[in-house]
Length: 109
Image 1 (tube, rainbow, N blue to C red):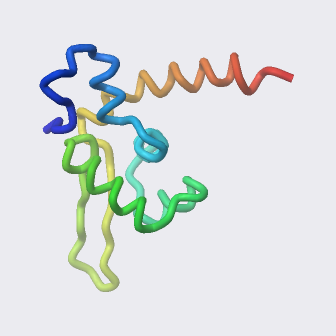
Image 2: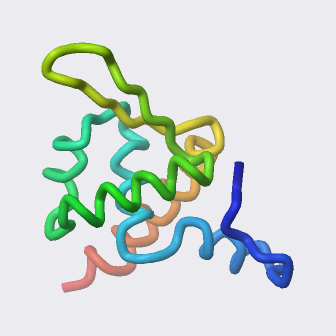
Image 3: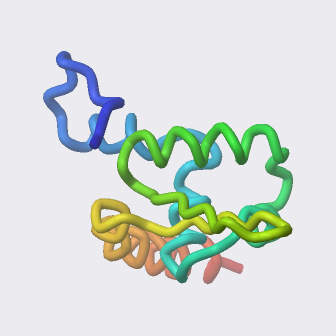
């Protein structure tokens, strides 16, 4: 369930960026594009994100239907995050962004 777009947003690019924009959401989604991860695994792969902010961003992404959270009834508790079908539909976009970044940013001397 996508909840972030406003009634006034008619531009699909603006609506998408409103949903996945910000400093941390795109890196979290890109991290999860490579498979299911636990909280600590995500935190390690995204430098400089605080645990509080990561928790908030994961909750937002779950609320917006881009990721799912699965809690296992184990001791110690285990929680895993993965992309939903909606979240997985962003993978080709991330692939294109990565290709563009490699060609236009990282390849520059």
